[in-house]
Image (cartoon, rainbow, N blue to C red; front, side):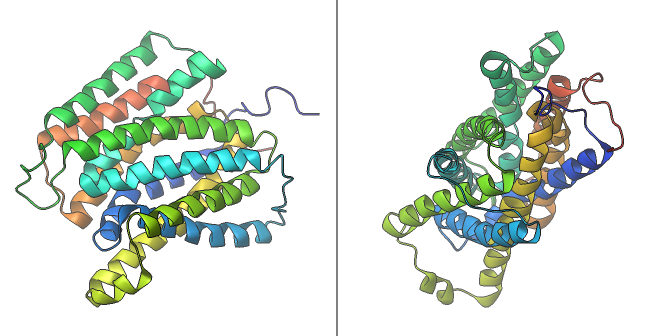
Length: 319
């Protein structure tokens, strides 16, 4: 019989390495989104991303001998997860489309601060203290700095300039992401992580597809009207989001959440905004300003202050 501590085990060396891998790979998501939304409507990008992820997760589960069968009662959990996925990724993709990749990588990573609040007030698995409150204050400063230095609608004068309305959508997406991570941890306690990730992607993709075709008017034939290089870049961005992020990273994260607390895993995400800014500047040519780096560093330090706990991040070899 499982003990109450099975989902709050100390991090092993292998768990840390897997977490760091997802951190770097996740950092490339906003840049990949920007490449995709140049040609494909934002919600359609999200739908294609998770359609690819479904295929990936099917073969991932098959290779690991995991059954994807769930009862009708069990399907309710990934169904709710799919609804959260639709709103979170939909707002994230649209927010980056309206803003830019560097702002996206900073703002979306404030999800950890909302997650800490959930852990404190709802699940009561992690408690706030002066150090964590300082981290929350730094995060609030970073977000305020982002919003205050973002161009208002109609004032963008350079390519890849951020916009306030996009940043606001990204903040809302970060809140929903925190709820989704907490809900995923709750769900994988009774459902295999691979099954949850697969079916929540299925339900989410149905919602994405419905919106993309009915509201955005997306048709696959539209891709044929663009330059071959642009089309290849857009499809490569979608493939990255689907296979690497929505497939591999989600699968790894779900397995890690089954054994370790969400906050222990999230501590390493301090590096995500820094890598994200680097990718956005190098690959998309995002505008570089001192305030951008100040915001990124503030979020990174805030994440460390909120989550770093020497007693709970003890590393040991897997037995």
